[in-house]
Amino acid sequence: MASKLDGVRLRTLVLGGARSGKSRYAEGLITTLQPPWAYVATAEAGDEEMAERIKAHRARRGAGWRTLEAPRDLAAALAACKNMPVLIDCLTLWLSNLMLADADIDAEVERVRSLGARLLWPGNGFIALRDPLGLAFCVTGNDPER
Image (cartoon, rainbow, N blue to C red; front, side, top):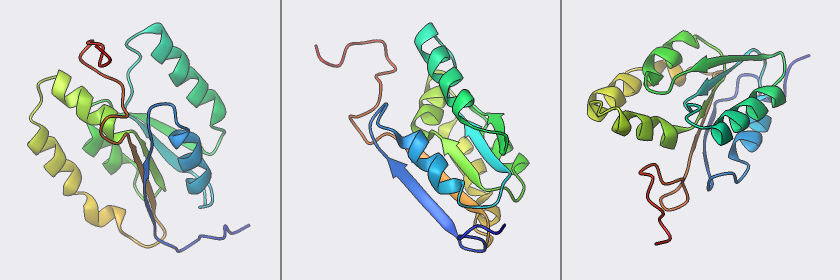
């Protein structure tokens, strides 16, 4: 059965604070396209709470998903997606991971940008999530409320 968005360019940036339902919303959007769907996960289980959140995300996704772990090498993960609809969860975590690894952010962004043409072919869905400034977790370990 064909989806109602077959052949349509789905290009979406989903914004929302931490734990605002961005992932669930984006999953609902991308599953209007034909499977398989690529879920590019940038989170790392640095503590027990994050490990539980990752576990819950995995359990929610069904059989049509191919998960690629990409805490830092987003370009390689996107290249591996071929022509699948892609959901990147989340750009904010990816950039945070690069900063914490003292990576060359400009070079990594350019690697992703170079894949742009592949992501724009008709029929490929592309959804990215990010937290707006001030609505993400503080990755420095410092309490932002102090």
